[in-house]
Amino acid sequence: MTSSTPAAAYTTHKAFDVQNFTLPWKIAAVFFGTLFLAVSSYIEVPMIPVPITMQTYAVMLVGALYGWRLGGVTIVAWLMEGALGLPVLAGGASGPQHFMGATGGYLFAFPVAGMAVGWLTARGWNGQRVWFSFLAMLIGNAICLTLGATWLAMLIGAERAIMAGVVPFIIGAVLKSGLGAMTLKLLTRDARHTAE
Image 1 (cartoon, one colour):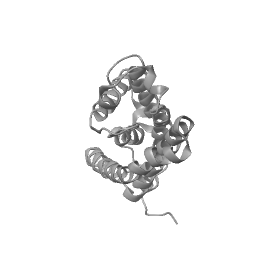
Image 2 (cartoon, helix red, strand yellow):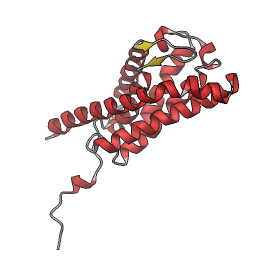
Image 3 (cartoon, helix red, strand yellow):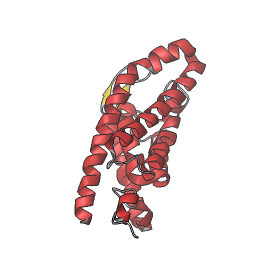
């Protein structure tokens, strides 16, 4: 006896099937992804020592939409642009000094977090299962805060790092994870309707 459940029900839905993109389309995806990440960097609430931005929202979304490989490449490309002097980091900042100072750990955490979200999304924690998508993005944000605060602790001490580099960002991480999950749901719904 065969099951009447369609095989599609067991496959993870992808908003963008980047694995099947040709090389020129992958290059274009990286370009537009870095542009999205750069724009998100300009949406900020200035704070010391680490500003609140929409970067984590963009990082998680790029990871979820592009998958862990291309998402990781895109995020690293964006960081390299910033290191080389393009004004793509928080508030239009640029230069290698940002990778050595208080924000360094958060910047280095971005590819790890984006790739983790991409990996989880490919395993069903996607826009079709919005709570799982939310948890995936929350995990990504937790990775950023953990690695960022660990780096910051080496500069200012553990207690100050937690109070200045974690606590002010917890509510934002939850809200941006929710926004990211809803955005992914909308994008994957549109992609599903297009496919149908």
